[in-house]
Image 1 (tube, rainbow, N blue to C red):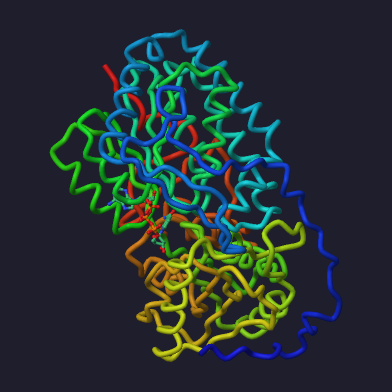
Image 2 (image 1 turned 90 degrees about the vertical axis):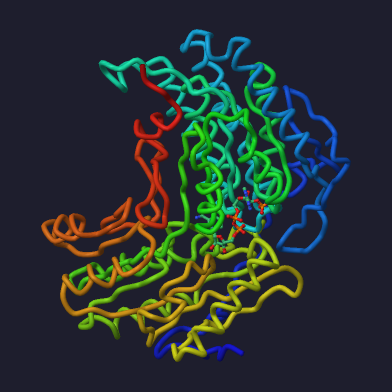
Length: 492
Ligand code: NDP
C-alpha cells in the first residue's frame, strides 16, 4: 500500500485552517429518472429494450437510467442523419446554418450553470472547472465555428469545399460536453449531420444538449445522440451509412477503429492518448512553473489526454522545485465536486480508479518513490490522492503508459538535448510544456519535439481558434481552428 508521506520539509500542515463548505446548488439541474435516445429530433425508447444506470462517481448513487442503443437503434439514428442531410441541411444557406450554431452557443451560455452542475455530478470533476473551463470553452467552440459556416471558401481558397454527409462521432468521459462541442460544432458548420455516441459513464450533458438542440429549433435529424457502451460505438463504426468518423479515446480502441475502417470510404480522425513531458529549465520562474505543473497533471484529476504526466526537471533545480511542488500539493483540496473550493474531484469510475491503483502499484514495485500529501478522502465515491513519483526510470510503466489519473512521474535532465530525447521517448506525441525565460530555447525545443501542441511557460491552455491533435500513437487529424474544418469537408 502507498506510503503516505507526512509533509515535505518546511511545508505547512495541510489542515492548518479549513475552508467552510461552499456547495453549488444541486437542484438547478432537474435530472429525470430516464433518458432515451435522441433520434430525428425526438427522444425515443431504444428498440433494444435495454437501459443501464448512470452512477455519480462522487457518491456512488444512481442518478438516472439511460438507453443502451443496439444495432437497430444506431441504424435508425444514422438513417435520421442521412434524411436530414438530404432533406436540406447541407443545402440551406451557410448563413442560416451559422444562425443555428450561434443560437446553440448562446443557449449554452444561458444554461451554463445547470450544465456545469450536471457535468460535475455525472462525471466527478470540480464545479470550478466545469463552470470556468468546460462550459465557457464549449460555448466558445460553437461561436467560433458559427463564424466559419459562411466563410468556408475563404478558409480554403481556390478549392470548393463540400460537406461529407453523415459524421459519426465517439467521445470519451473526461470532457463530455466539451468533446461534444469539439465534434459537433465544426461538423455542422461544414454542413454535415451527426450521430454522436457519448461515453457510457457520462451521458447526462449530451442528453441535456439534445434539449438545447430542440430549444435552438435545429431541424430534426441534424444531431442524433445514441447512448450505450462500447458495443454501441462498435455498431456506429460498422454502419454503412456513415461518411466520416471522429473518435477521441484510448489508443487501443482507436487502433481497433482504424482497422475496422480500412478499405472503406470513411474519412477518419483519431485523437488518442498522451504522455506529455512538462520540461522545466533552471532559468524558469519556479513558482509559475509549479502552478503550471499542478495545472498540467492535477486538473480534472489527470483525466486529460494532454496532461503533463511526466515532469522533466533540470538537475540543478531539482531540490528547490520538488520542495515547492510538494508544498503546493499539500494545499490541494480533494473532495465533493460540487464544492466551489474543491481542486481535485472524484475519479470518473470504479474501473478507472482500479486502473490508476494498478499502475501506481507497478510504480512502487518497479522502484519509484511515492509521495502523497495528507488529505481526508470522502467515505463514499471514487477518490485518489494527488500523487508524485520520484526516482523514476524511463522504462517504468508509470513513465511510459497513460495513467489518466492525478499521478505525476518526475525525471531529471542535464542538457536541452537530453530533455528532448527523454521528452520524445514515448509512443505518444500529443502535447508538451517548456518552462524557460529564453525565447530562443523555446524555439529550439519546439523544433525538436514530436508533439502536436507545445505550450511555453503555461500548460493546458485551450482555445477554439487553435488546432489540437497528435503524432504517433496519439492519433492524427486536427480539431479546432481552421484546421478543424478540413476533416469535415471534401473538395472538388
Ligand atoms: P475508450 O477508448 O474505451 O472510450 C472512448 C469512447 O469509445 C467511449 O465512448 C467508449 O464507449 C467508446 N468505445 C469503447 N469501445 C469501443 C469500440 N470497440 N468501438 C467503438 N467505440 C468504442 O476509453 P476508456 O473509457 O475505456 O478508458 C480507458 C483508457 O483510455 C483510460 O484509462 C485512458 O488512459 C484512455 N483514455 C484516453 C482518452 C483521451 O482523451 N485520449 C479519453 C478516455 C480514455 P464506452 O464509454 O461506452 O466504453
